[in-house]
Amino acid sequence: MAKQLHASANDRAKTRTLAAHLYSAHHRRLLAIGKRNSPTTEDAEEALHDTFILFIDHFDPNAGAPPLAWLTLTLKRRCWATYRRQQLLHRQQPLPTTDTTTSDASNELLDPSRLPDELAVVAAN
Image (tube, rainbow, N blue to C red; front, side, top):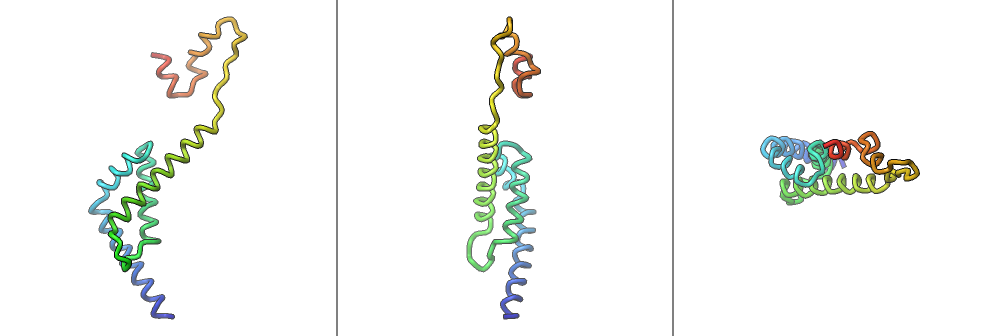
């Protein structure tokens, strides 16, 4: 039993060393993949960070799986999950309603204070 625990600790040390090497050698490439698969740069950076944590916790260096492929696939899946969560949140937010009983409803619709920030910039121009 003690031998098995020692092997597990040894594998974990190998995985940490491998993770450090892969991070230094492939960080820019992996971040670029994350940016292509995420809505924002911040989401890509967070997904990359989470991916390396998952790598250290779950990757088995003795299983024969290519570590860079494992990282790439896991990173993409983390990015896609973040994107899906954000899409669900946006769908659940109620749409703003307009009061058409006022005398000039068309001006109200273009009032930047009533629009989300992204649309206010467009309406102001």
